[in-house]
Amino acid sequence: MSSTTAEIAVERDSAERQRSLSAAVRELRTKAGGTDGARAMLVAGGILMPLGFVLILLGWSGASNTVNLYEQIPYSISGGMLGLGLVFAGGFCYFAYWLTQLVYATRRDSADTRMILERIEELLTANAAMASAGAAPAVAPRRASGGTATATATATKPYLATPTGTMYHRPDCPAVAGRDGLRQVDGSESGLNPCRICEPE
Image (cartoon, rainbow, N blue to C red; front, side):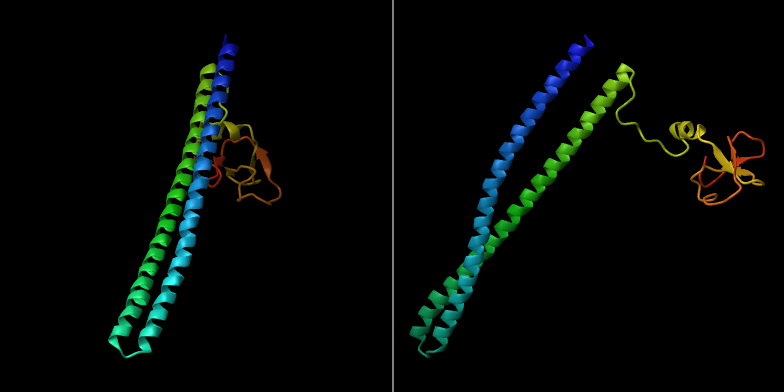
């Protein structure tokens, strides 16, 4: 019965993974098309802004070479105003390209965050299932130093003490690292207290 349930769970997980993969592929296709549009705006901005500056310079050059007002007005309109409009249009294209890149970056960050949260949810579900089945969890919970897990792990290791010292240390304690003449103790001897560096509790 349990094997059948596990097979059903594996099949559901495989189907969910296939659906998420197909959704990711569709999203990649959408992003690729959007990237081409953003690139077009970048190219348009790169063309319009220099062209606008060139028209402004040509209009100024033509208007400065004559003293007649009726000749200066066409240069101002065709060169100055049109060039200024092209400069503004190119600037808007650049601004739209920048906003598009911000949107794509936000979507990528959201997708990464969603993927990480889904992975965490899978691990928590697997740990809960294993805990209910009586097995050891796939990811053991971390505990603070001096907790039950740390105490259990360090109880099986021998401690070290100096010949005349009143404290016992772990083998990796910096207080006894590299020292000679150390003796092994189990920490239950009378007159020995735990080191405050490696055994804060």
